[in-house]
Image (cartoon, helix red, strand yellow):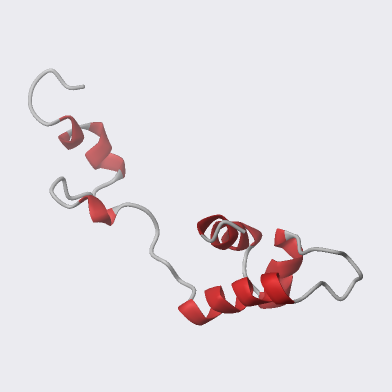
Length: 82
């Protein structure tokens, strides 16, 4: 921590200039996929099986099916406890 004043005003402000000390909601990336994609991924996960004969979906196979990233699929599954 800084000896004097606000610790955020120092080095952090140089690499995070848009950071508003009074508004913590400015953190992270904004969501770029819509609710319909999220719901489709969840529905497909629960009601379909991969066409390659696998017994369950992988993040990569589901991502390829919907044209999104594997980390996005993992985030959706984690948020829904799947």
